[in-house]
Length: 180
Image (cartoon, rainbow, N blue to C red; front, side):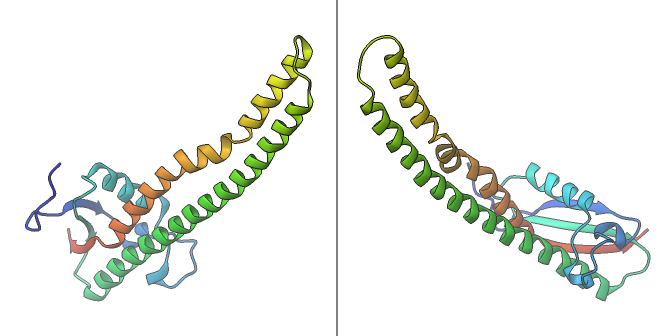
């Protein structure tokens, strides 16, 4: 794996829009620079960003018809960076919540395992139904640890990857081009 050189050009994500309103969620009453991106626009940007090398810099180019409006360019660029920065913060918060949930689940799972092992020790060893019951308690105790194991080993990866992508998008160069 080679790292991109500083001189290499950033990976381009280009959106050609009829008007700037297509970029933002029209139901969001926030001021222009704090508005949420339209769901389709966000999916388009994120989808293209995923296709680029995870180590490359990203550049988002918005192409709008009409004469150049420098103030609009600055607002659009700020809005896009602000939106993805906000999403990255929310994803980090979700990740922290997932780990907190995993720790709580682990404590509950270990307590449940201890109870089932204690109950198992009360059942006299033998054959037939007592052997089945003892083995059932053993299995139930270990199954109680499934959620914390799943959470702590596997469920955090997609959130971490999503947060990193959103952080990259929040730092992306945003270029707004006006023309036909």
